[in-house]
Length: 525
Image 1 (cartoon, rainbow, N blue to C red):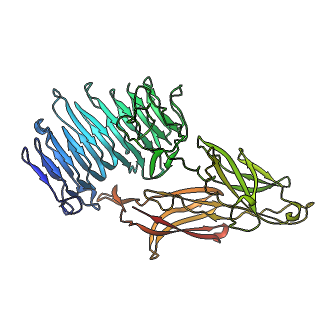
Image 2 (image 1 turned 60 degrees about the horizontal axis):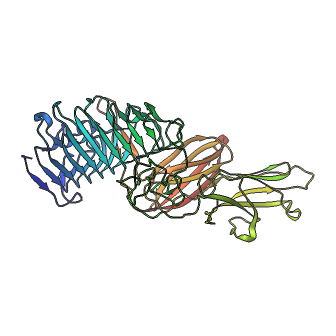
Image 3 (image 1 turned 135 degrees about the horizontal axis):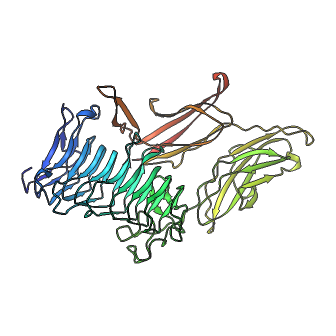
């Protein structure tokens, strides 16, 4: 593209730059000053990773490429998605890149600004890689981490920068395609910057590995270390299910209370993150900033919904000193009030007020069945109520069978169970729960309605207990390189919307089948 050229395609769905037949590394598009490219899909081969190339390349060798705009494009399977010196990168989709966006210049005398706004970026090694005097302003992006090994998975990497470099990183959503631990730091920032109202839902070894920086109003969920390094300006963040973080009067560790834990990260009414951010930062409605993705001046103004609590999970029933002892996991919602315990003598019973046997705060209940039912089958369910009496869906159903007379020790029989996935229908991912009463070889498969295998989620030995497995419409694929090395080859992302079947098989000692069950789920893209 010569300086000042605008290249406008008919749309990323129909206007394709096809690079899939290339046999050597290549730049699909090279830009000079003040160019614009819009509405294209640049495709590289997903099967030959060692000969992929760069999607859009701003020719920084002349140190003059400024004022470029890259908007509404899609780049599939590049080694490098976009190489930018200065310009606007907005509303693009980058799929399965090794390095998604590189901000590069050879000129150490001039400051460059790369504005990276509202893009969907899936990557393996580095999301944004900046060098020299390039300043980055990244807002409203979604980063999907596809890391396959310990060297991958860095959202922002700029260890080699000059003191003039600054990063503004705001309202970005960072998620991981699997629950595996990323053995890298998410943000590696060598010099000060501003990191506010971002959300990290992934298991990182270190989320921030940083020199002095303003780290405020971030929602960090499920990592090992929240911040490694100088924590002077680490304030008003939520470190939920994060092992190590700066514990002061401003940082908290609470359930954020999302509308949906896998697809809708707006806050519910009564979330402890509402108005809990830096008091000097205001939301769009003028109130004190919320912690997390939609807070701050670059967030959203929306109405908080008063939703019911999550269903209680991991309900178990055992005999203890002549009583049926029920235990379950504690709900973590800030507005949680009480549990209701229901009992019946038939399976899959309808829970209503006539079946309530207890209302309590604790997660342990000892039931003394009435004398006339001293022998027989008992079935239990638990629901959670919040302070405005919204009631959750019921927990899984726990079953216990008692035989004999009161003087004899009771016989307890629990059973294997495959529970309903949640949420259902789902978009980005769903959870499939199941329970094993004994250890065994477990296979959890997903099929389409034609009976064709879509995904193997579990294939190996598991001990007894309660399990939750996440299913996502995408999955890692690997292949062997020409010298035997292992390469990332992209994802099997051809799973369409529709109904799918999940099936659980368990084999016990002697490879004897002990359980088989299936359920239905609906994917809505």
